[in-house]
Length: 143
Image (cartoon, rainbow, N blue to C red; front, top):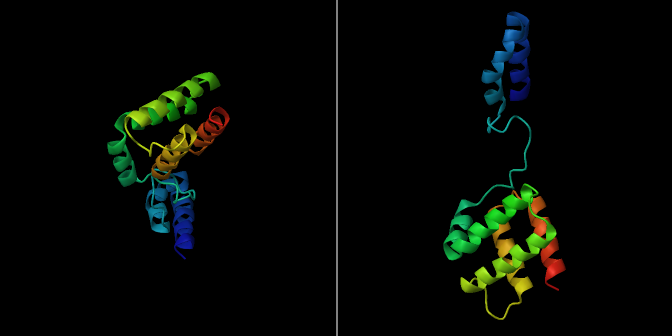
């Protein structure tokens, strides 16, 4: 119902005020229910949001590795990292995780990396393409 009232406001404003009536969007869209004005009126997947509590906990447990993972995701996102550099970064990350005593010592390097990526992706799920590239590299490098 609110949708039709909002459309009515927009159409009425355009008929009365001409194209200046488009300014009625400022009034109509919040009335329709556009909650996230900065994202636009398009439907988004609300399940894919950052969990800052998990991120803060993970960042306090493994501060150096946490920053390394962030840098790795950004480099992959910018496509400034080739596959051999990615494998080197993963080996350095495993070493850093071992130094920070992230995982149980009897886990393999592959298991440690998959576990940290799972924990990181549950806190920051917006990097799905980058996570798939990292998981593929982990499975390829650590067999």
